[in-house]
Image 1: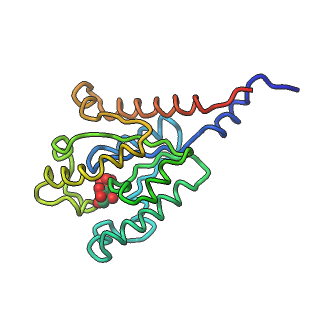
Image 2 (image 1 turned 180 degrees about the vertical axis):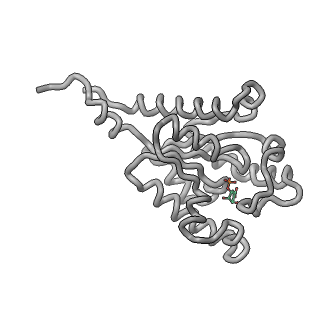
Image 3 (image 1 turned 60 degrees about the vertical axis):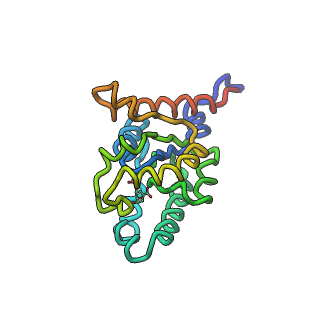
Length: 199
Ligand code: S3P
């Protein structure tokens, strides 16, 4: 018997991708990512929290004791592992995930949909708390974030399938995080629908 349309479940299995949120520290990847995962009914993983849980060491300890290169190495291994899982998930990546070429290559694979939450350093500096998992944030967050953004923005752009202007949504909406999550989930659905197959 010939079916006119692929079974709904088959279509999902064919077209669903991992969703990765990228962007600078303080842009809201974790909060928005959790909401996106709820909207798409997929598991959520925060890369930093997962790294801490797996290694039994805080991000601050990785930087202080082993150094940034060692942190970047485990961050890369974790990204590869999470994206090799068969079940599509929503992942909030650490802000520096784009530094390593191997990560950028992995993020450009067709089974990953990357959303860049973009905001300028002045916006981020108001929100970025000096939390223990952000040892790179120094006394002058605006200049630190500007310096990091100058280097990273071309890489965010290189790997992003969609870009969301976070400050614009914060200016216009009463519930910006919820609206940002809806934008991201919508972009994912459009992307995945375009990739679905009709027989
Ligand atoms: C980093 C961002 C942090 C964390 C680490 C390094 C960065 O994650 O991975 O402090 O290099 O931008 P968030 O972006 O979740 O704050």
